[in-house]
Image (cartoon, rainbow, N blue to C red; front, side, top):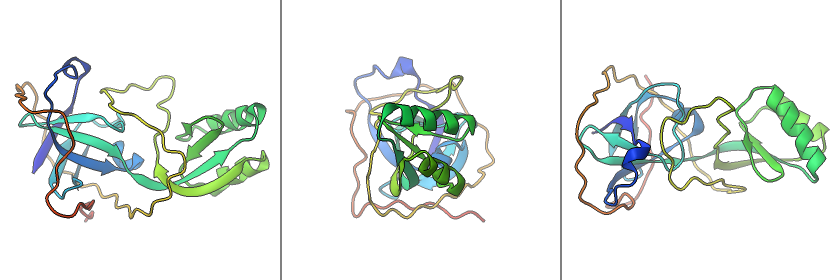
Length: 206
């Protein structure tokens, strides 16, 4: 099992030879967790032992206890996207949704949130076009949010309509983080190479 113990710090991102040992697709709720067990796109078992309270970012690199790197990928999940037709309409809905203090992803004349019938009706009340879809959910961190890591290749999806079965299962691994180790890097920066069919399976909670 790959044991992830820390997030890659900005000071280490300049190293030219970084090998990606695994890529893990995580929903927004999963990226907020610190300690759980999952599988990579190629079926490798990955355990995360991270500080809680800091959401992982799409494209962020994590470091294992053996100095390998695991890349975070924002998974497709069920979201609601509301699209405005003009600036004042967009400003008003952003203001009202902001007052609700819900996770909110903001694009150009559109906002994206987790499914919520009350908020969806509010968007319709202000004349926005509301669509339920499958897309990565990458909300704003807020004015006082701390990243605690470095993101690579951060992107916003607008209307990806892919069917993706999500499994969000946390499993407490009961170990303390270990730090202070040295990392050795001797490979090029790339993606996880799979042998056989790729899949994304999470271990069920018991």
